[in-house]
Image (tube, rainbow, N blue to C red; front, top):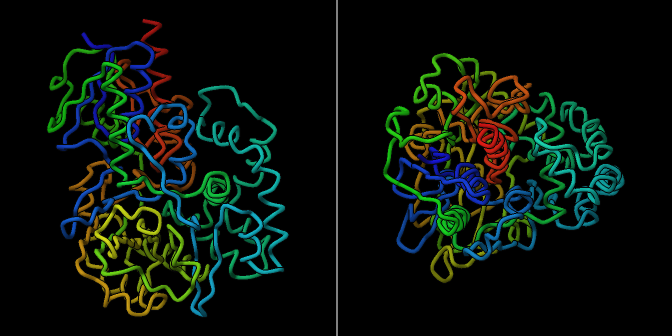
Length: 469
């Protein structure tokens, strides 16, 4: 009998398996797709030689993850490639606000009226970042806080809505860039703890940047899988699990799946019926004949580019999908251009690029034209560079990754108390009514992103149960 079986070979499932194998437990992973990866895959979606990341591409939480940093992933091929600028947020006049590794450079891009306010926000927290990120990503508590004073200070600023945080700034550049950071989790800007989202992304950039994985996000999953195999763990792909009886006998079953899939497979009935799925995205992957011709010079060297442009535009786009159940006429876009840091993604002189806008959950329309109209505003001539494109709305995203229910790449609405307490209001979020069944996906804390911390935290709950039995 195995000690643990993990269902799903995304970053969280693989991290949970690694953490258990490191502690001497026998582990096997079962994955429905023909490769490991989940939200960290790389494929030739458009043309031969163009390597695209179907989901996550830039990894501020990955490079800062306490779980990943404790593992020898570099030994298994993971290399972080850093762009000159982590992120840029261009405006119609050809200028841009930037999120730089330097707090000073970032503050200066906001203009003199807001530079001081930004430094007063970031400077007290940044020196304590390593302890803060470990404490924040271990919530609900799986360990005693390393720095309770800084965590409390962060909570005072982070728990209120981001609309309150934005009042610290007088001009549009700071407000727009920070609004865009919050929108990365597709959350209404006025929601509980949305200030924390913007702060975490900003602090992560200043601490270690927003890199891409050299060769593609698949390198993250492959490194975890390689380490797991060296630890004696087994990985089985092309293995769809429909019920617990499909799996070999084990003392624990750990699910890197959606709560609804876990309930169906493990026979938990309506246990997760109150879990809410959020808005979805419509994503376009491009093969380009050259770099994106951004008008703002800063955007040309940034790995991630937010296309809003203004805070009011971002709020309007989020309101359309979350309150009006429609696709926005002018979408807010998150875009990633890996080639500015990693030339291996495309043939010489060519580039890969992706952009997504927010749409309602389960939406089956086509946002391509709206996406490209928005891109042309800030990068005139963009369409002339397109060699090929691959589009993915909610149905296609679900087909690629069943955890994205309705196209929700956050694996559950990141709003209200569900932002922090997911998949249920519980201080033991990784356990279930079945004593041998656990959840470790992004539907559990600390939530979305390629960081492995949900798997890391869930593994703690598993090994404590195994040692006690």
